Amino acid sequence: MTPLARLLARRISATGPISVAEYMTECLLHAEHGYYSRRDPFGGAGDFITAPETSQMYGEIIGLALAQAWIDQHRPTPFVLAELGPGRGTCMADILRATRSVPGFTEAAEVHLIEASAALRERQRRKLDNERITWLDSASELPDAPLFLIASEFFDALPVRQFVRAEAGWQERLIGVHGDRFVHGLSEPAPLAELERRTADTRPGDLVELRTAAGAVIAAVASRLTRYGGGALVIDYGDWRSLGDTLQAVTGHRYVDPLAEPGLADLTAHVDFEALAVAAADTTPSSLTPQGVFLERLGITARANRLAKTLGGSALEEHVAAHRRLTHPQEMGSIFKVLGLTPNGAPPLPGLDP
Ligand code: SAH
Image 1 (spheres, rainbow, N blue to C red):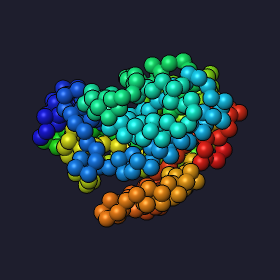
Image 2: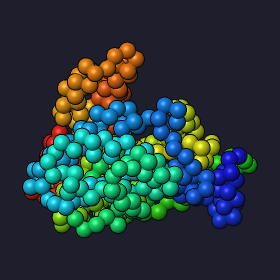
Image 3: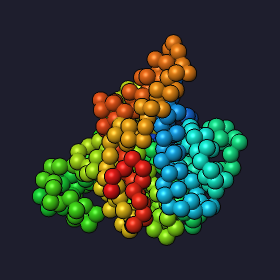
């Protein structure tokens, strides 16, 4: 058993089974043994490669999209440029480099990073050592100002609760211990107001995921957008509506059993974009757009061709593979989706349809 597994098993024996969300929270963010608290999991030598780590083009295009949105909204100055869950800081570094050519943008930007992991904050500090950055624990601490924000593979790391539809009400999927293994069980059925929107499209036995913590984050972002203007880009894997168990664990670029080694594997679940749009009540959500389509509309192929001219040998091969990985429907192009949020009446974000 991992050290975290021993702690969780003791807690479950003392106070009873825990929810999938409690399990995820401990596995990812436990101060000592949590996956993100312990180390930097990204990159080829780590456990998985995210979009900004795949190619500089990703952050560049996001930066230029946010800068165009800033121009479309008459260049509010100053404004907050924010990222939720910035990982290694690569995306923000690429955003800041690409937008340096946009007159006035960098000077007006007050960069804020929302990051829970002390280890990753340190990593971001080193990556962005020439920039003025403010770190925050939560989106609710964002200043009252126009807000241009990116969240890329952030929401998938927020914990989900899982519920199985019963004849009447819902049963929560819980995690208990049996010997030295963690096992799933179900609570007694009970009605659940948050899942009323799902009674029409589910049947007894269906499993639905609920990401309670996402609502507060989105509400904090949306309230700044409606009051001060701006725009938010949420990019993640998932769909308009969640259905089924999507909890997954990855370590060393392989899928593993989510209950097998708590704290040692990354745990995520697909994002329910409809739930985010519902939580962003007073803003206008864009159409949910595949990442490949979004990046192509914003000219990733032209950018890729230009970069290719400066490369040769294995660097060129890697660059071509990275372009494919970000955009191809069988790689990140389709399963990853982009949702834009803008104040009512503002122009849609570049690359996204109303
Ligand atoms: N956006 C980056 C990293 C994605 S991993 C990339 O695409 O490469 C998820 C990130 O969210 C990590 O930086 C992790 O530490 C952070 N994170 C996870 N849960 C969080 C929470 N509750 N509050 C703030 N940051 C969190």
